[in-house]
Amino acid sequence: MSAIITLDNVYRVYRMGHEKIMAVNGISLEINEGEICCLKGPSGSGKSTLLHLMAGLDKPSKGSIHIGKTRIDTLNENQLAVFRQKYIGFIFQSYYLIPTLTALENVAIPLTFSGMPKNKRLKRAKELLEAVGLKDRMKHKPTEMS
Image 1 (cartoon, rainbow, N blue to C red):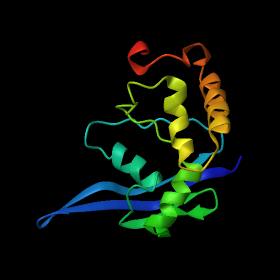
Image 2 (image 1 turned 180 degrees about the horizontal axis):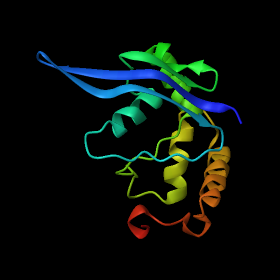
Image 3 (image 1 turned 180 degrees about the vertical axis):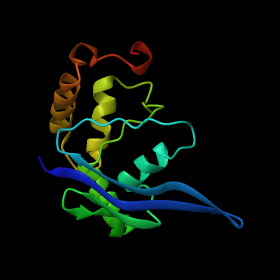
C-alpha cells in the first residue's frame, strides 16, 4: 500500500504572550490509502489541531504534510482552497446541515461550488448517501435523522 497522507516531524506552536503552547510536538506518521485511523487522547492533547493541519486549515510551525503527492503546507490560501474542494471532505462534529433541506440536498450543496450541473450533483449525492448506508433516508430532513 502507498501512503495517502504523510506527516514528517510536524510541530504546531501557538504563542500566548511570552508563553509557547506546543499543540503538536514532532508528529510523524503515514496513513495508507484505504486505511481507517482514529485519533484518541485527552482534551487539549492536539487532536483537533492535528486534523486541522492535515486538512490544510492550519499551517505547521515546522515539518511537512503531504496528501498524495502534494505538499500542502507550502500551498498558499487560494491553492489550498482549490485543493480542499477537489480532494478533502469534512464531517463536522456539529454537522452544519441546513435544517430545511433533505439529506440529499445537504450532501449535494458542496458540489455546487465545483460547477457541477444539478442533475449530476444529485446523482453523486445519492451515490454517496447509498455508500454510507443512508439510501432510505435521502428525503429526510436533519431533524428526522440521528
